[in-house]
Length: 391
Image (tube, rainbow, N blue to C red):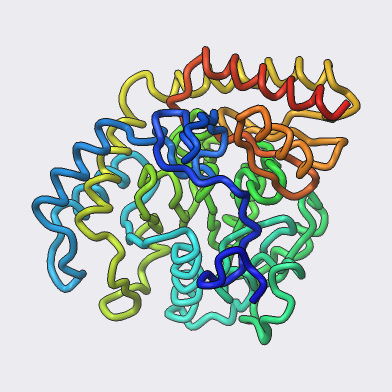
Protein backbone atom coordinates (compact mmCIF):
# COMPACT_ATOMS: atom_id res chain seq x y z
CA UNK A 1 0.00 0.00 0.00
CA UNK A 2 1.27 3.43 -0.94
CA UNK A 3 1.06 5.24 2.37
CA UNK A 4 3.52 7.25 4.50
CA UNK A 5 3.04 4.72 7.32
CA UNK A 6 2.38 1.35 5.66
CA UNK A 7 1.46 -0.34 8.96
CA UNK A 8 -1.69 1.83 9.08
CA UNK A 9 -4.70 1.12 6.90
CA UNK A 10 -4.67 4.11 4.52
CA UNK A 11 -8.25 5.29 5.07
CA UNK A 12 -7.26 8.84 6.08
CA UNK A 13 -5.62 11.67 4.18
CA UNK A 14 -3.70 12.90 7.19
CA UNK A 15 -2.25 16.38 7.52
CA UNK A 16 1.51 16.12 8.17
CA UNK A 17 1.29 17.50 11.71
CA UNK A 18 2.03 15.52 14.85
CA UNK A 19 0.87 17.03 18.12
CA UNK A 20 2.52 16.06 21.38
CA UNK A 21 0.72 18.23 23.93
CA UNK A 22 -2.46 20.21 24.39
CA UNK A 23 -3.23 23.16 26.64
CA UNK A 24 -6.79 24.51 26.64
CA UNK A 25 -7.44 25.89 23.15
CA UNK A 26 -3.88 25.20 21.97
CA UNK A 27 -2.05 22.25 20.46
CA UNK A 28 1.73 21.99 20.45
CA UNK A 29 3.34 20.22 17.51
CA UNK A 30 6.46 18.08 17.90
CA UNK A 31 8.46 20.94 16.37
CA UNK A 32 7.32 23.17 19.24
CA UNK A 33 4.95 25.23 17.07
CA UNK A 34 1.73 26.28 18.84
CA UNK A 35 -1.55 26.02 16.94
CA UNK A 36 -4.83 27.63 17.99
CA UNK A 37 -7.32 24.78 17.77
CA UNK A 38 -10.77 25.47 16.31
CA UNK A 39 -11.44 21.77 15.72
CA UNK A 40 -11.56 20.33 19.26
CA UNK A 41 -10.88 16.91 17.75
CA UNK A 42 -14.06 17.44 15.67
CA UNK A 43 -16.21 18.73 18.55
CA UNK A 44 -14.83 16.17 21.03
CA UNK A 45 -12.59 18.19 23.36
CA UNK A 46 -15.50 20.27 24.61
CA UNK A 47 -13.52 21.57 27.60
CA UNK A 48 -10.27 21.99 25.72
CA UNK A 49 -7.09 19.98 25.99
CA UNK A 50 -5.90 18.60 29.34
CA UNK A 51 -8.62 20.30 31.39
CA UNK A 52 -7.33 20.06 34.98
CA UNK A 53 -10.61 18.75 36.42
CA UNK A 54 -10.80 15.99 33.81
CA UNK A 55 -7.14 15.08 34.31
CA UNK A 56 -7.74 14.80 38.05
CA UNK A 57 -10.86 12.64 37.81
CA UNK A 58 -9.29 10.37 35.20
CA UNK A 59 -6.17 9.93 37.33
CA UNK A 60 -8.23 9.19 40.43
CA UNK A 61 -10.43 6.64 38.66
CA UNK A 62 -7.48 5.03 36.85
CA UNK A 63 -5.86 4.31 40.19
CA UNK A 64 -9.02 2.60 41.42
CA UNK A 65 -10.71 0.63 38.61
CA UNK A 66 -10.65 0.64 34.81
CA UNK A 67 -12.96 -2.09 33.56
CA UNK A 68 -15.28 -4.76 34.95
CA UNK A 69 -17.79 -5.21 32.07
CA UNK A 70 -21.53 -4.77 32.30
CA UNK A 71 -21.92 -8.08 34.10
CA UNK A 72 -21.78 -6.01 37.28
CA UNK A 73 -23.13 -2.74 38.61
CA UNK A 74 -20.95 0.27 37.78
CA UNK A 75 -21.68 3.13 40.21
CA UNK A 76 -20.04 5.75 37.98
CA UNK A 77 -22.29 4.63 35.11
CA UNK A 78 -25.39 4.82 37.27
CA UNK A 79 -24.44 8.32 38.44
CA UNK A 80 -23.85 9.58 34.90
CA UNK A 81 -27.12 8.04 33.68
CA UNK A 82 -29.01 9.75 36.50
CA UNK A 83 -27.34 13.10 35.76
CA UNK A 84 -28.35 12.87 32.09
CA UNK A 85 -31.92 11.81 32.91
CA UNK A 86 -32.19 14.70 35.37
CA UNK A 87 -31.01 17.21 32.75
CA UNK A 88 -32.97 15.96 29.73
CA UNK A 89 -36.24 14.54 28.40
CA UNK A 90 -34.97 10.99 28.91
CA UNK A 91 -36.06 8.26 31.30
CA UNK A 92 -33.18 5.91 30.54
CA UNK A 93 -29.65 5.83 29.10
CA UNK A 94 -27.36 3.26 27.52
CA UNK A 95 -23.63 3.98 27.18
CA UNK A 96 -21.54 3.27 24.12
CA UNK A 97 -18.01 4.10 23.02
CA UNK A 98 -18.90 6.25 20.02
CA UNK A 99 -21.57 8.03 18.06
CA UNK A 100 -21.63 5.26 15.49
CA UNK A 101 -22.51 2.72 18.18
CA UNK A 102 -25.18 5.08 19.46
CA UNK A 103 -26.68 5.22 15.97
CA UNK A 104 -26.78 1.43 15.78
CA UNK A 105 -28.65 1.18 19.08
CA UNK A 106 -31.06 3.96 18.10
CA UNK A 107 -31.96 2.03 14.94
CA UNK A 108 -32.38 -1.22 16.88
CA UNK A 109 -34.51 0.53 19.50
CA UNK A 110 -36.87 1.87 16.82
CA UNK A 111 -37.17 -1.53 15.14
CA UNK A 112 -37.79 -3.34 18.42
CA UNK A 113 -40.42 -0.84 19.53
CA UNK A 114 -42.58 -1.45 16.47
CA UNK A 115 -41.84 -5.18 16.36
CA UNK A 116 -43.14 -5.59 19.90
CA UNK A 117 -46.32 -3.75 18.91
CA UNK A 118 -46.73 -6.13 15.96
CA UNK A 119 -46.90 -3.19 13.56
CA UNK A 120 -45.63 -3.15 9.97
CA UNK A 121 -43.75 0.16 9.99
CA UNK A 122 -40.53 -0.57 8.12
CA UNK A 123 -39.32 2.90 7.11
CA UNK A 124 -36.97 5.30 8.88
CA UNK A 125 -36.84 8.71 7.20
CA UNK A 126 -33.46 10.44 6.99
CA UNK A 127 -32.12 13.48 5.13
CA UNK A 128 -29.46 14.20 2.57
CA UNK A 129 -26.27 15.67 3.94
CA UNK A 130 -26.69 13.63 7.12
CA UNK A 131 -23.85 11.85 8.87
CA UNK A 132 -24.67 9.21 11.49
CA UNK A 133 -21.41 7.25 11.54
CA UNK A 134 -19.57 4.73 9.38
CA UNK A 135 -21.02 1.35 10.32
CA UNK A 136 -23.07 -0.33 7.61
CA UNK A 137 -26.27 0.60 9.40
CA UNK A 138 -25.24 4.22 9.85
CA UNK A 139 -24.16 4.67 6.24
CA UNK A 140 -27.40 3.09 5.06
CA UNK A 141 -29.26 5.63 7.19
CA UNK A 142 -27.36 8.57 5.71
CA UNK A 143 -27.76 7.26 2.17
CA UNK A 144 -24.72 9.10 0.82
CA UNK A 145 -23.37 7.54 -2.37
CA UNK A 146 -19.86 8.62 -1.36
CA UNK A 147 -20.06 6.60 1.88
CA UNK A 148 -22.09 3.64 0.63
CA UNK A 149 -20.38 2.90 -2.70
CA UNK A 150 -18.81 -0.54 -2.66
CA UNK A 151 -20.24 -1.58 0.71
CA UNK A 152 -23.52 -3.16 -0.35
CA UNK A 153 -25.84 -4.81 0.21
CA UNK A 154 -26.90 -2.22 2.75
CA UNK A 155 -29.44 -2.45 5.54
CA UNK A 156 -32.89 -1.82 4.05
CA UNK A 157 -35.65 0.30 5.52
CA UNK A 158 -34.34 3.85 5.08
CA UNK A 159 -35.70 6.59 2.87
CA UNK A 160 -33.57 9.69 2.37
CA UNK A 161 -35.37 12.99 1.78
CA UNK A 162 -34.04 16.30 0.52
CA UNK A 163 -33.01 18.66 3.30
CA UNK A 164 -35.60 21.40 3.73
CA UNK A 165 -38.22 19.87 1.41
CA UNK A 166 -41.29 20.22 3.61
CA UNK A 167 -43.71 18.93 0.99
CA UNK A 168 -41.70 15.74 0.49
CA UNK A 169 -41.54 15.23 4.25
CA UNK A 170 -45.28 15.61 4.70
CA UNK A 171 -45.93 13.23 1.81
CA UNK A 172 -43.51 10.60 3.12
CA UNK A 173 -44.41 10.74 6.81
CA UNK A 174 -47.39 8.42 6.97
CA UNK A 175 -48.30 5.46 9.15
CA UNK A 176 -45.74 3.23 7.43
CA UNK A 177 -42.93 5.30 8.94
CA UNK A 178 -41.31 3.96 12.09
CA UNK A 179 -39.18 7.01 12.87
CA UNK A 180 -37.56 10.16 11.60
CA UNK A 181 -33.82 10.48 12.25
CA UNK A 182 -32.26 13.93 11.95
CA UNK A 183 -29.45 16.17 13.22
CA UNK A 184 -30.73 19.49 14.61
CA UNK A 185 -27.53 20.97 13.17
CA UNK A 186 -25.83 19.02 10.40
CA UNK A 187 -22.09 18.97 11.06
CA UNK A 188 -20.43 17.00 8.27
CA UNK A 189 -23.19 18.24 5.97
CA UNK A 190 -21.92 21.81 6.18
CA UNK A 191 -23.18 23.34 9.48
CA UNK A 192 -26.83 23.41 8.42
CA UNK A 193 -29.13 24.20 11.37
CA UNK A 194 -32.72 23.03 11.22
CA UNK A 195 -34.86 26.10 12.00
CA UNK A 196 -36.76 25.91 15.28
CA UNK A 197 -40.14 26.09 13.55
CA UNK A 198 -39.18 23.14 11.34
CA UNK A 199 -38.15 21.05 14.32
CA UNK A 200 -41.43 21.94 16.04
CA UNK A 201 -43.33 20.98 12.90
CA UNK A 202 -41.45 17.71 12.65
CA UNK A 203 -42.32 16.88 16.24
CA UNK A 204 -45.97 17.62 15.48
CA UNK A 205 -45.95 15.39 12.39
CA UNK A 206 -44.41 12.53 14.36
CA UNK A 207 -47.05 12.93 17.05
CA UNK A 208 -49.82 12.87 14.45
CA UNK A 209 -48.58 9.67 12.81
CA UNK A 210 -47.09 7.94 15.86
CA UNK A 211 -43.58 7.89 14.36
CA UNK A 212 -40.67 8.16 16.79
CA UNK A 213 -38.43 11.21 16.56
CA UNK A 214 -34.74 10.30 16.76
CA UNK A 215 -32.29 13.18 17.12
CA UNK A 216 -28.59 12.82 16.38
CA UNK A 217 -26.88 15.32 18.68
CA UNK A 218 -23.47 13.67 18.51
CA UNK A 219 -21.80 16.80 17.09
CA UNK A 220 -24.20 19.60 18.01
CA UNK A 221 -24.99 18.48 21.57
CA UNK A 222 -23.25 18.83 24.93
CA UNK A 223 -23.45 22.62 25.11
CA UNK A 224 -22.14 23.45 21.66
CA UNK A 225 -25.11 25.64 20.66
CA UNK A 226 -25.36 27.37 24.04
CA UNK A 227 -27.91 24.93 25.46
CA UNK A 228 -27.10 21.46 26.71
CA UNK A 229 -28.74 20.01 23.59
CA UNK A 230 -29.62 21.86 20.41
CA UNK A 231 -33.27 20.73 20.29
CA UNK A 232 -33.95 22.69 23.48
CA UNK A 233 -33.98 25.93 21.45
CA UNK A 234 -37.15 24.68 19.73
CA UNK A 235 -38.73 23.71 23.06
CA UNK A 236 -39.41 20.16 21.91
CA UNK A 237 -38.23 16.73 23.03
CA UNK A 238 -37.27 13.68 20.97
CA UNK A 239 -38.15 10.10 21.76
CA UNK A 240 -34.58 8.87 21.27
CA UNK A 241 -31.33 10.84 21.12
CA UNK A 242 -27.79 9.89 20.14
CA UNK A 243 -24.98 11.54 22.08
CA UNK A 244 -21.17 11.23 21.88
CA UNK A 245 -18.12 13.39 21.09
CA UNK A 246 -18.19 16.18 23.71
CA UNK A 247 -19.76 14.04 26.44
CA UNK A 248 -16.39 12.44 27.20
CA UNK A 249 -14.32 15.60 26.83
CA UNK A 250 -11.82 13.61 24.75
CA UNK A 251 -12.32 10.20 26.34
CA UNK A 252 -14.28 7.75 24.13
CA UNK A 253 -17.89 7.83 25.30
CA UNK A 254 -21.32 7.85 23.71
CA UNK A 255 -24.88 7.32 24.82
CA UNK A 256 -28.42 6.74 23.69
CA UNK A 257 -31.02 8.61 25.73
CA UNK A 258 -34.67 7.62 25.41
CA UNK A 259 -38.11 7.83 26.90
CA UNK A 260 -39.38 4.75 28.70
CA UNK A 261 -41.94 4.27 25.92
CA UNK A 262 -39.40 4.34 23.08
CA UNK A 263 -37.03 2.04 24.97
CA UNK A 264 -39.74 -0.37 26.10
CA UNK A 265 -38.55 -3.19 23.85
CA UNK A 266 -34.94 -3.16 25.03
CA UNK A 267 -34.95 -5.74 27.79
CA UNK A 268 -32.18 -7.98 29.07
CA UNK A 269 -30.16 -9.54 26.24
CA UNK A 270 -31.40 -7.24 23.46
CA UNK A 271 -28.21 -5.15 23.35
CA UNK A 272 -24.80 -4.96 24.94
CA UNK A 273 -21.32 -3.48 24.90
CA UNK A 274 -18.09 -4.82 26.34
CA UNK A 275 -16.53 -1.43 26.99
CA UNK A 276 -19.56 0.87 26.93
CA UNK A 277 -20.09 2.68 30.20
CA UNK A 278 -16.82 1.56 31.77
CA UNK A 279 -15.73 3.25 35.04
CA UNK A 280 -13.04 5.40 33.38
CA UNK A 281 -15.32 6.82 30.70
CA UNK A 282 -18.23 7.45 33.04
CA UNK A 283 -16.13 9.15 35.69
CA UNK A 284 -14.88 11.59 33.07
CA UNK A 285 -18.33 11.98 31.49
CA UNK A 286 -19.91 12.79 34.85
CA UNK A 287 -17.37 15.57 35.40
CA UNK A 288 -18.00 16.95 31.89
CA UNK A 289 -21.75 17.06 32.53
CA UNK A 290 -21.18 18.69 35.93
CA UNK A 291 -19.03 21.43 34.42
CA UNK A 292 -21.21 22.13 31.38
CA UNK A 293 -24.42 22.31 33.43
CA UNK A 294 -22.92 24.53 36.15
CA UNK A 295 -24.50 27.97 36.55
CA UNK A 296 -23.35 30.40 33.90
CA UNK A 297 -21.38 27.99 31.71
CA UNK A 298 -23.87 27.70 28.86
CA UNK A 299 -24.64 31.43 29.02
CA UNK A 300 -20.93 32.03 28.49
CA UNK A 301 -20.91 29.67 25.50
CA UNK A 302 -23.79 31.64 23.98
CA UNK A 303 -22.01 34.95 24.54
CA UNK A 304 -18.76 33.69 23.05
CA UNK A 305 -20.64 32.21 20.12
CA UNK A 306 -22.35 35.55 19.46
CA UNK A 307 -19.01 37.36 19.62
CA UNK A 308 -17.37 34.88 17.28
CA UNK A 309 -20.24 35.07 14.81
CA UNK A 310 -20.11 38.88 14.81
CA UNK A 311 -16.38 38.79 14.07
CA UNK A 312 -16.91 36.19 11.36
CA UNK A 313 -19.57 38.35 9.68
CA UNK A 314 -16.96 41.09 9.55
CA UNK A 315 -14.46 38.68 8.04
CA UNK A 316 -16.93 37.69 5.31
CA UNK A 317 -17.53 41.38 4.54
CA UNK A 318 -13.77 41.98 4.33
CA UNK A 319 -13.12 39.00 2.05
CA UNK A 320 -16.20 38.55 -0.18
CA UNK A 321 -14.08 36.78 -2.78
CA UNK A 322 -13.10 34.12 -0.23
CA UNK A 323 -16.18 33.72 1.99
CA UNK A 324 -19.92 33.75 1.30
CA UNK A 325 -21.75 33.45 4.64
CA UNK A 326 -21.62 32.41 8.28
CA UNK A 327 -23.71 29.47 9.48
CA UNK A 328 -24.48 27.82 12.79
CA UNK A 329 -25.20 28.70 16.38
CA UNK A 330 -23.17 29.03 19.56
CA UNK A 331 -19.77 27.47 19.03
CA UNK A 332 -20.72 25.19 16.14
CA UNK A 333 -20.08 27.61 13.31
CA UNK A 334 -19.29 27.32 9.63
CA UNK A 335 -17.94 29.56 6.91
CA UNK A 336 -19.48 28.88 3.52
CA UNK A 337 -16.60 29.55 1.14
CA UNK A 338 -16.23 30.83 -2.39
CA UNK A 339 -12.61 29.69 -2.59
CA UNK A 340 -12.09 25.92 -2.18
CA UNK A 341 -12.51 25.13 1.51
CA UNK A 342 -9.51 22.80 1.49
CA UNK A 343 -7.29 25.68 0.37
CA UNK A 344 -8.57 27.83 3.22
CA UNK A 345 -7.93 25.04 5.72
CA UNK A 346 -4.33 24.83 4.47
CA UNK A 347 -3.89 28.61 4.55
CA UNK A 348 -5.21 28.65 8.12
CA UNK A 349 -2.71 25.95 9.08
CA UNK A 350 0.05 28.15 7.66
CA UNK A 351 -1.21 30.83 10.07
CA UNK A 352 -1.04 28.24 12.91
CA UNK A 353 -4.82 27.92 13.12
CA UNK A 354 -6.66 24.59 12.89
CA UNK A 355 -10.07 24.28 11.19
CA UNK A 356 -11.88 21.34 9.61
CA UNK A 357 -13.65 21.11 6.24
CA UNK A 358 -17.24 19.97 5.70
CA UNK A 359 -19.58 19.40 2.78
CA UNK A 360 -21.02 22.25 0.70
CA UNK A 361 -17.60 23.97 0.58
CA UNK A 362 -17.76 24.91 4.27
CA UNK A 363 -15.06 25.10 6.91
CA UNK A 364 -16.17 24.20 10.42
CA UNK A 365 -15.14 26.23 13.46
CA UNK A 366 -15.58 24.05 16.55
CA UNK A 367 -13.44 25.59 19.28
CA UNK A 368 -13.42 24.31 22.85
CA UNK A 369 -16.39 25.67 24.77
CA UNK A 370 -13.80 27.11 27.15
CA UNK A 371 -12.15 29.32 24.50
CA UNK A 372 -11.53 32.85 25.77
CA UNK A 373 -12.54 36.13 24.13
CA UNK A 374 -8.87 36.95 23.58
CA UNK A 375 -8.41 33.61 21.81
CA UNK A 376 -11.46 34.32 19.63
CA UNK A 377 -9.88 37.64 18.68
CA UNK A 378 -6.61 35.89 17.87
CA UNK A 379 -8.41 33.24 15.81
CA UNK A 380 -10.03 35.92 13.67
CA UNK A 381 -6.68 37.66 13.15
CA UNK A 382 -5.27 34.38 11.88
CA UNK A 383 -8.30 33.65 9.68
CA UNK A 384 -8.00 37.14 8.20
CA UNK A 385 -4.33 36.48 7.49
CA UNK A 386 -5.21 33.15 5.83
CA UNK A 387 -7.90 34.76 3.67
CA UNK A 388 -5.56 37.59 2.65
CA UNK A 389 -2.98 35.05 1.49
CA UNK A 390 -5.52 33.64 -0.99
CA UNK A 391 -6.84 36.94 -2.35
